[in-house]
Length: 474
Image (cartoon, rainbow, N blue to C red; front, side, top):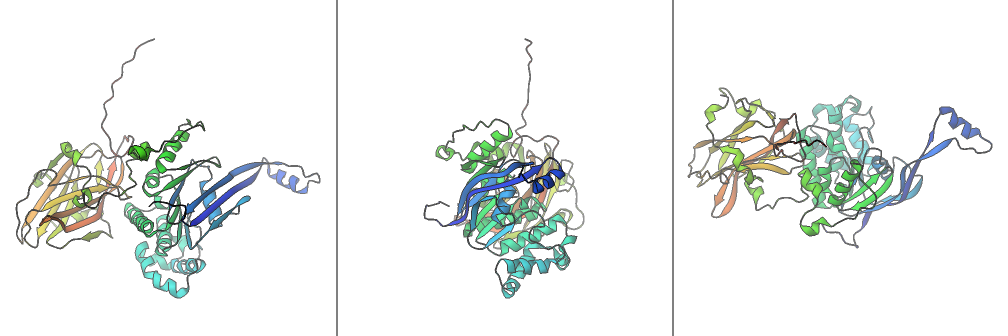
């Protein structure tokens, strides 16, 4: 969203400094405290050195930097966990802070007790918290563990509960420090979707992360820190590129920023990361559950299902790792009632080797007449970005009219060129009725796909480069 000078400032950081005294030997601390001449036995370490920035209402601002640059120290000062040596910080409205594991929770209290305690600290009454409790428990989805002391929780369970608590509060300001890197791929995807909702509602977000893809997707502005100093502040693409220079040891301090948006490119960094800060047009590829029609040369569609592993009993999807909270919708004229993911050897699995062929098999039953159905699949990252996918229409497979009771088996076969990592699979059966795109059955993030790789390159996918070398002697 566009920012104006009239927007209210929700977070104001003014000339903040945090200094720690470092002593070479423990005895030096005692010597300094009893010295009659006030001799210094310490040296000052500036964790933060005169840092200033602000965050406007409804803005999403990221803080990035190398380890030890002062990112987490800054968030702790903003949230009141630490006191600055100098400078001031002000935060308006209701603030929810999700910092490192353990912050804000009493380890001896149960999950329920911590929910009520934190709600009270944020200014909500017990009755208000009682009303919010079902939504918090539904989002966290940790079952009866919510009645156990949180010291018995795994790190994943802890973050599920903490994130569920803070985002369900609909805070005016949400402060997040690396919390989204914990938990399984399905929960991470759910968190990112919730972050999208909060951003659309106008929640002010301040986040610290090493995940540059999240910076590109969510942040309107980025503050770059290095060794306690504020290096620069500006557009995400510019700051990511400058951060890469620091990582490579090529930062000189004399860099000029170019507004790459003026050239139609948000940033070189965005392209390298395969990330997008804008959502796909709801009336274009997203409606088709695809974003990679140019991958057709790697894909063989509607292959013979007989070559895949025969599943004699039950459903294929019962033998896969599924999303327990899958989202689905449609008018019910078709049911995508079963699906499978098959590796190069025809084995049903969620794990695919990079560089090998794999297949996605869909079974669709029709509950009404449909003129020309379209079968689709999309592979997304955990932030919800479409990475690749296709559908029968893009692949030139026209399906004739079907009647009630008909069934189709559709197999998409392609080469896995995505980098090693975890991804999410969505699929659907759609079509056009009187020129209007219609969804019969769509399943979002229904299963995970884990790609195993012994060689990852830059970005989202591998171009399978071939390298030749010639040596010429001096």
